[in-house]
Length: 119
Length: 432
Ligand SMILES: Cc1cc2nc3c(=O)[nH]c(=O)nc-3n(C[C@H](O)[C@H](O)[C@H](O)COP(=O)(O)OP(=O)(O)OC[C@H]3O[C@@H](n4cnc5c(N)ncnc54)[C@H](O)[C@@H]3O)c2cc1C
Ligand SMILES: [Zn+2]
Image (cartoon, rainbow over all chains, first blue to last red):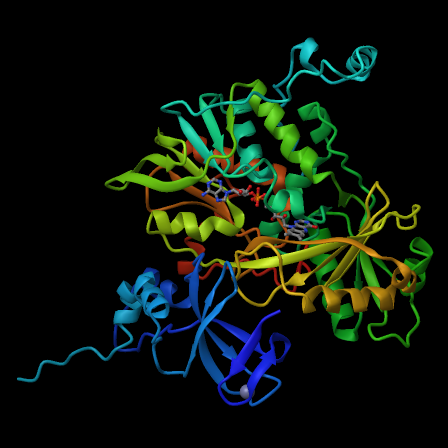
């Protein structure tokens, strides 16, 4: 059983939380024309590491707030809890963020507005 | 769905001296069982093979067996990092059925069930396949409606399926509580009479022994650590026992599929999650069928040793620790005791978890990849034991011919690009 330290409510049992899966999956924006292969990386393909995993959790039976969590999938050690919209701060968390293949994926590149060249 | 020209590959163990039989039993009894021949050789890896299967679970061993027996590829090896069947094959609750909703699922699971029906004879190994029936119960009006839709779809595929009323269920299973007052009242159910259970270890051992007899090397305690490629072609595998050259690699590693895929820079839609089960202390025979409930995530049967075998739903977060989280079986046991009040007096003997490879549409992946010679068979998630023979049969065909047959075709990785998903979530029952 995990004990998760909700940033708002404090330490609670895992039964109060829902796990939202992989964190930092950016949605490609519409004006970037993606192939079906690239779009499927966003929609279906998942990072599934044996080691440090960055994931989203929601304190469903408490404050109902979402947050990010870096957790080891072998030892279940929680390495870091950090707010939505931010990236990890610890060395292990940062490494896991960089190591994720998604950082180099076409889908993630297409989540930022296409550069418009102003003439 | 008649499939009369199905090649079952029963070509191993043709030498009389090697076969298990009532006579070999008597012969060996006379020498106090000290002279049984080894079931399979202890093989060390050769420098090169025509194909290598990674993963010595039921699916991997079945794939190797059919490659050798049907496709004549005998210069092949199975590489297992631990011991045979030590993954989900040896951890599952062994429910076998083919009553899935979609045509594609009927294709693969019924293919497997047909192979199960004669597997002990084909392998000359008693896999203890017992067609004791699988009864799925429903607990709400909505579930009842969903069930009848499903039952009709199943029947249209020529697969046996009968709807039962609570009274009929009670008649078959006298120990069940059908009172309308319980937390999850029994409102009906459907039965596949040809479904049942088998002995999990025996499946791994039976395939291993038969494959070995045809010349397949079975290499245990050997971990694959890298997949070597040259351009877009696989050239070999790095292992803890050194490099092995091969032009064809089949990955059949269940919960570790993403780890292997990462070695080749391939993306999979898989999440690895713990799935848990437990057994009670052994008791006298009391339950002669399999009962499953999707709504409460519970399934129960009685092993031949007398233990009540109970399985839970999948854990909610990714993990590679083969244990699982306690609230999951706790929830399952509460529902089980409600349905079978006699269970409350039993003590738990063992609890364990296996890491299952869950796929977004709850259907497997049997597929080529963008790398030539690299194939994946995974995504069976919480319910792949039942398909072991069918999965190995079609995967061997895929590897041998480098093209999927009609049963495997819908299970290509490409479906996550085309959107042709085979959604078996609600349809087939949550777990098994
Ligand atoms: C608790 C539980 C209950 C279940 N109940 C049912 C059920 O009732 N009915 C049903 O149909 N299914 C059930 N399942 C699912 C079923 O067990 C699996 O789908 C099926 O057994 C998968 O078989 P496999 O051969 O693909 O995988 P496994 O048996 O897991 O074999 C994979 C093998 O690959 C090896 N491996 C991994 N990485 C490497 C590497 N790098 N190098 C070498 N080898 C490696 C592993 O050690 C392992 O032995 C259950 C699963 C669990 C955990
Ligand atoms: Zn909270």
